[in-house]
Length: 188
Image 1 (cartoon, rainbow, N blue to C red):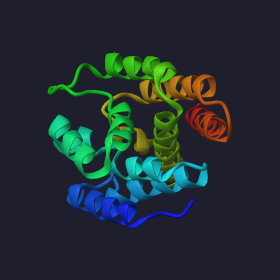
Image 2: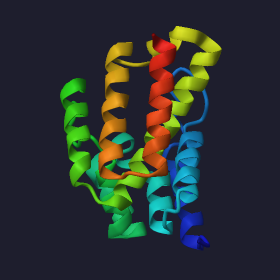
Image 3: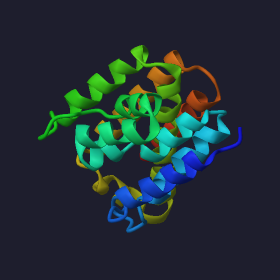
């Protein structure tokens, strides 16, 4: 699938929106995560709309909420905005308690369209790979980067893997399940 200048514009927009953000505990510019998720979406056969949504999947949640989502819709269309909305686990501030928010997100995956599921699973794959890579460097201190304890994080990733295996069976869901198994084995 060739990418158009619309993708180029989205790449610049995502970089500008997240310019001041870094990955938790690493100091790595956050745009690296956006690029990693986007690469996965493209590699798993996603469309240009899905690739653009991957670049912007955290924009509404991290950079302004619903006004940012409306801006994304204006700039990139309703299909991209719908995927970004589907990747967002909370629209309220303060956010609901972590466990309830994550349980609701996992339950919602069964009702989301495949276009949104591919972006979401790619996000979770990239996060799981980062956890495993960081754990190889810093050991169990990687779990200190999370607001929840290791067991809760592992519960969430296993619940996600199971939900994606049911809702979007195939290579992406299989990769997430493989990574979660590695996370669990390393935490044992």
